[in-house]
Length: 316
Picture (tube, rainbow, N blue to C red):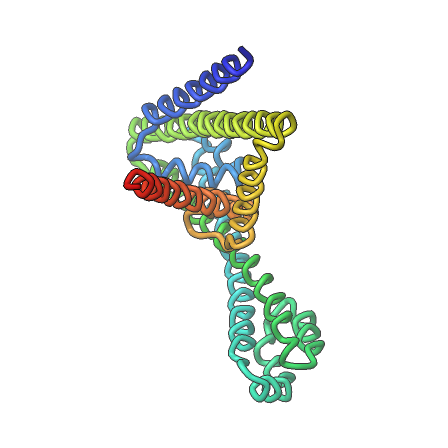
């Protein structure tokens, strides 16, 4: 009876999630997908821009556009400064990776002071990088220094790409508002501004619906995993001698997930950046994908193996 109740609950939650997904799919305008993604990026970085545009009138729109054009120009200047620091770090990292043997390392270390003066001339973190390399006393210790610099570079690169994507999205939105603002017809200006504000309102409601869909999906996954573990562990406790294989399977599953997370790259891809994933979140996605692939391959091998064993037994 309890199992039936649990199955009904899981089934009901699954149906709710499917309905939310279908509702989201039917009301979502695929032609405005890029605009929807842009609005999400702006919402994460500068929600005030969306709020100001939604509250704007044809009279206040010029001031709103001018304010954010100025802000975005300043933001672009700051990003250019970050790009310079990123490029310096990339060049330094390339230097270190080119030191493939003891002789090259010793030669680079002997001339490092001169190289550092030119390479780090405009670097904000010059002294820390110089001190970090000066602590490397031998070629075998170089790998640790490379790993530290690479972590700094990857973190800076990810932040830079995320901010650059936001800037692109914000410029596109402000550019659309500016086109509305420069319209000669007051009637057309009013109509276009209303369309823009309706789009932004729809994007916000779609984002809430998407979040609800994701929440229910995670809830369903959590409930399913919890029930699976609960009943598996209950059976193991009650019938340990006959159900130890379940414990082995669970342990192997945990090992697969751990391996997937460990080998998952923390470097965000363009699509991951677009989706707003963090490094840890992206590693979890990699772990889930790795676990799925291993599980599918294992299942296929098990089916094939079982079929072969059965065929051999039947022939006997």
